Length: 413
Image (cartoon, rainbow, N blue to C red; front, side):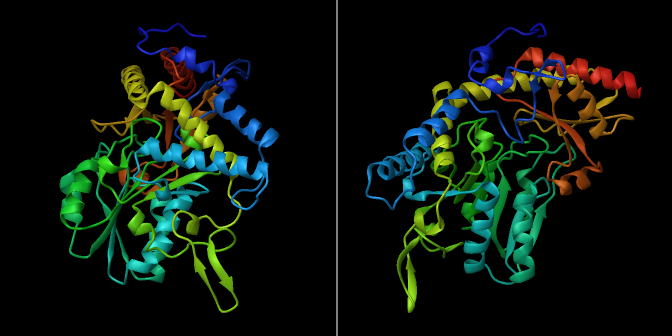
């Protein structure tokens, strides 16, 4: 590996030992995994919890009176309580398991939106949103007649509260924004946005996909109305997401999908539904994956999100300083408040070429528009190369990235 060029403030190597996928060669060199904003690697503790569930405790939940079913049900509901504590929700009844953050936003759009929004109502987003926080509202534009209103971002990728305030009108009925931008790393001023929204009695949804693994999240302290995130970016399994919502709001929302386990009584005269969270969890859920999410949360909680945030900020500062020294490279997104994501473009080299060459050096980065085409259009670029860091990344890996980029520079000039 490469020599570490910065004193350690955090023992990343200790935690790297928990991630088997990080200890392999790619194209003959040690893997440097810098695509954590897309999906993070999984620690042994999560992998073992999946094996344990499938090996000894697997059965369908909420249905069986036998021991295995009760074990699986207990493990599933324990995970729900773990999520509640992690984000400091008032009640585990406010924790709805979905297939991912995308489904969580769709659930809110199609259940809450269709119930409480009408033609002419405005939903505010920003220009840096992920497609998952744009397209569901565009569907409501066509079908209900709402107006999706993007808040302009600054050229450096920052979101000014003044721009949010200016975009709010008497017709604004929801503000739905990212907590952290997946494309640029910008940390949005969500506290100020929520305060402004509350002063006007406007509910707020936060897309927490890029925040939940990088900083402590307290939904009660934030004061938002909905918070969504996915498991796989939080070192947990794929196929699981969380929708947190205030209980009184969730109980007023009709079911998004229907089927088994979410009903109260079914007859051919009609059906009544259970209260939240079960009314939104139709059919057999991703049982083992939810249990794995609980294990992932317990794992990162033992490290501490505040410590993780502090270390990742050091990584970000170091990477920013090193990449800024490369003349042909331009960092896209330089807001003063950022999480550990760096997007960049290079003269004469397309991001796909950059990604391919870096892969030859064992370095995994994301290239493209990052499912955020509007922000690319706003900034006048087709795509970027994105390096996103987790707490298991090291300063030596930043050095490896810099060396890899210099190879790109040699090839493309």
